Image (cartoon, rainbow, N blue to C red):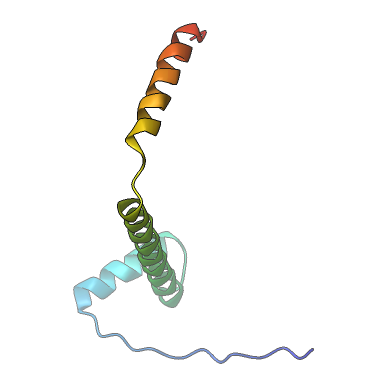
Length: 88
């Protein structure tokens, strides 16, 4: 099996001087290159977007098939019976 070598793409992103200084300061604090700092920031943003989409789908699922109120009442009653017996 041959390894496929992927050549990284160079991306240019215009930023103002003050923002670039903040990026460089942050990169210095965590002892990373500017490029690594920016890559990790982008990864975090993409992960957040993925999580937001998962939450949206989760909510949509519950909106289309909501919990049965009888189940919640049964659970509450069962807990009310059990909790006083707990050794807290």
